[in-house]
Image (cartoon, rainbow, N blue to C red; front, side, top):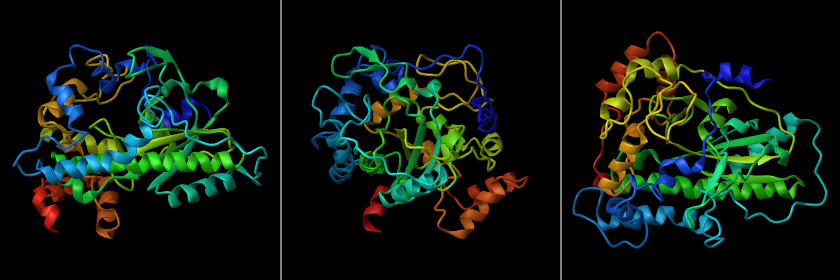
Length: 385
């Protein structure tokens, strides 16, 4: 199927002036070289993720909260630093921790059979959702950037590798912890999500390599996860600039595996997110830094960290990151306040999700506000529950 067809199904609006992205301009990479982002607060923000040496008596910012947040990131940090100063795997470079590819290929009766098996194993290894789509060079970083030497390098995953299938995985973050953001304790949800995601990517990649096929795991490195996730059918693009997944709302961490194992592809889905986002605007109204737009989608980038040539809701990532560094931890208020941030193990939440995709969406929004969903819970309640 052509990319134009799946673009339409995914509600992508790609313009003639489209430009592929350079990793150097991503906001976290800019914090390594751009004087507008660098500074004492940025250094303090990164340093706080190491040894617990700074805390406050404020709810959600105690020594215990910092200890839990930093512990939640620990596995991700170990895996990203396993190659020393040569690579930062999962964040600037793809994972290279796999063993050699098996000399013989396991054969499958069809690409549907192999896709079904991969999804089963992915769930075993901790994936909350898993879908498959095609490789798309548009969403790959055109150049890489090293945090260690500040130099740009050529793209790591390119069409000539022949990795034409992309397995897109979503790992849910803790619903309970997410209720306490923005706080250091709430940030533990992201750290644990990254650690679980990294472990999943390394394990599933190795399984595929054991079948005799190439597989490269990718977290925040090599390219953009959200376009792949939307085209694979994990969810839709929301006003907050995040994937709104069907099973967990915006409360997910994403990863990808590039492989040449023949796999059947999934299709984009539409369960009413964009129409709901048009009337909701909770994420924009409650954003502490006012970084999320209240208006219509636009093709105008706000900084070099925004994509050129795509019409969408565009987040001011500079003001967003500035708030992170000011409070010394990430925020995620836009996730907490999103009406799609629900525990869909409950049938009543699944029923409301369905209603949100109908003409009753304003009623659903009123219900969400009436019952007080999205309000911040005190961190101390999480510790005592």
